[in-house]
Length: 554
Figure (cartoon, rainbow, N blue to C red):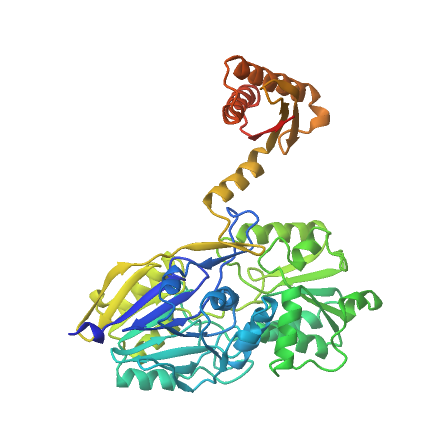
């Protein structure tokens, strides 16, 4: 078969990890990109704000890129959009809610006016380019307006579920369009790419409405002030919290910038209806008694700067946690965040608060399909090839095993990795190469300027501190002043003056020995100071602080 009848699928993020979902579909000289997300930094990335995919391959082929298609508005699918559009300005296709959240991000980055956003609805079919037509299929998820896609190419149809579950009683909108998945299956699906997040869980994911019923029960049976932490983007969950509060005659205050922003977007777009007089400014909570209040906040993942974490550590300007508070954490931990959440819960308990979380009560349901739902999608679409996506390695492997049990041939199940180039057509499929992929770290306004060396230095500083030796040399290479020793994060100077003085003497000896040996270049002096002080400190304290010599010429 001619090469032109092959389509390439290149995941640049989202495989073997949670987050930064981005998949490239390439046919001939045309490319479309599906989703453009970020991931949250781990504990091994101090100071990093976000992690985004490496799009070097797309930058090198930017003339081929025709569109960016977004399945839904979660950060792991839209968080990288502003960085992507700054380099590759192409039309962005998404539903109303999704584009509402994207617009907010683009406005923050100052590029909204130069971006082209194309609103679509579930059921629409858009001819994006000569070789790519995309059909948008309604799915249920933990955010409104989520869609899966059927990507139609000359090589065949690829169905990508996006993040989904089967919810027969969704809070907003209609049930997932299973009939359309079935129709596509009857016509022939070349490949299915399906959400693997809950591939380890048996059965079905519960409906979002079960959480609302639990909120009603809790709100009715407590006189305490209620604080609910959940994902800001889970508009259906926020909707149910506000509904339960209004029915129990409680006012609602909102804390956390992302929560405030998303509630504003959802309200303006009509996805969130707040009864008049229910919402109050966070500054007004002191005007009401505990049984009259519900506070909706960010911080369900124990994020260091989130509102709930600041409350737990008495660092919030408006809210102080007391024994009269009931805190509900309405979310499940993202893998890797378990310890951070546990720390926050312990701090809340220390302050006397009552805490309810998923392991104690059904205050959260997942937005992702469990094993039986995944089977239904496979059974409806009847794909020739199957590619599990969106999940860590254990999720992908479990999903692949599920596909094998559904009768999909082992040789037609592909466990891919980020950066692999997968080519398929009617005559076969295989991995044919790799392209650059990986993690780009975002720190403030800096994108990609924090790498392994910077992270190594940050960890070093965090673990052992820093010692700075400052000295002055004359032009003819004589010691004019110093060295003075400055310590941060190594020892408390006032309690260790003798050690600091000993370090000063050792640094002075090192400098003089170097000068006596007629090695007067600054690099040699700095290297000797670092080595001599490093050996001395390790011998005395068994520590390895960062040592930074600073030389000034007078």
